Length: 65
Image 1 (cartoon, one colour):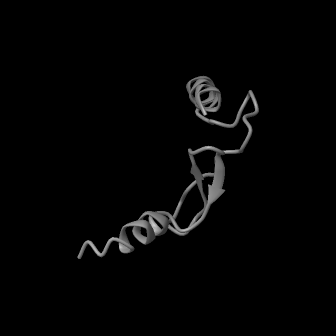
Image 2: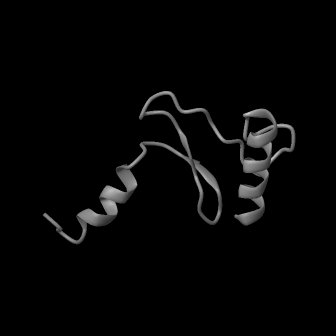
């Protein structure tokens, strides 16, 4: 994860694009709407959908309401 983040940040500092010039393991998608896929910075790094729906499912099982 640390190598991937270093690559994303270095690329962004050089080109304002976290995916270029050095290719990372997973291409960081552009987000324009809440429904767009996003980069989940976890082990492993992956693309996920429905931002914030997974954390809500996690907390729902504890009945925090």
